[in-house]
Length: 439
Image (tube, rainbow, N blue to C red; front, side):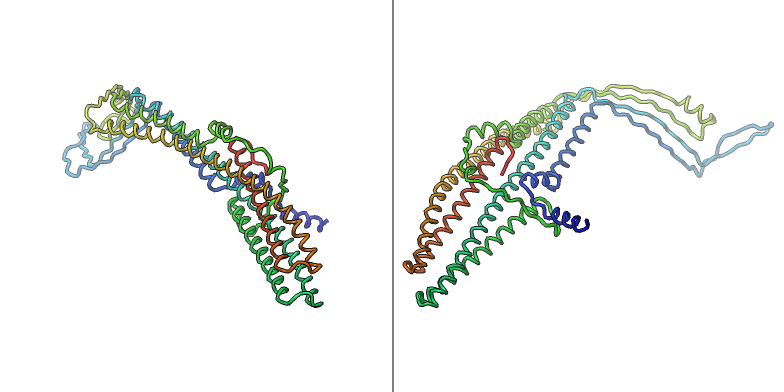
């Protein structure tokens, strides 16, 4: 039972991450995403405060003052049993108590428009969260596909190395029987060493991309990390590529950066209304109740509270006459910001189309290269097999054998690269249409 438990823990520690698992983990642990969510929460608090500002404010006040009059000569006189007592108090105490209310009845709808603008700002922050989500998913997919490509490239280089070792062993046998010179054997050994270097180099690139993905997922420390290696079929790379127009039309409706630019235009319109309200008067209402007490008063504390109690209510109107061009400047700046928002919207639409068109062109060209590379690999494999047989019979020399092997390896690498480039760009096009990536 103990051994079974240890084996279970060992297997769980060697988890192979799928693409969806990487994305799900990043959605929970990405620092960039957490920061974007905090910005959204800050915007929500600002919106709530502006909504609360539509209601009256109520304030309770109380002031307690102590005083000292060192040269006061007269004081309070009292008669006790026919005797007049004169008491001089050089210290005294005053207290005031009040409740005050104020309410902005109308200020050109600045307060209501401010609520609208803060709601739009909160919506923009939420869209920025979605933008961060999309960016992280795209980066994960790019790294994931690169790892899949390099993993297969490692296998190809490993097979190439095994072939080089066999050729070197065969060359050694031929040298021993006098059918090959040591110079030719040295070339076979050099080919084997080159293949060993290529294998180590590809393995290092694979480890580097895995490290990049691990860091993107915010996985730190010595925690082991590796990804699942799904087999990407040739049929998947030869699948249909959606048209640029269809992807762009869907992206315009779904992509958060486009929605964000639209909300920015709406926000600039509201800001212009807020600025123009500076020309309008402001109407406000105030009211309050209060009372006071003093130690210099012969009445008791409760009686003073009652006697000194008063209540006030009032209405005020503020009409702007000359504000040192503040309102006009605010209006002009709001107009400029509106124009900038429109230009930003156009720029994001163009960038979106450019990105989609780039994915489409890459997918098309990579798919065409994949078709050509597939035929080339078949041809080069057949050629190399024939060269190997002829080499073993002494009909082909080392140079011809090495050239055939190099051509085969180059064709295999091009096929792998074009295959995964096609799949990646196909998935990105689907992602921009609102579909989830599935590799």
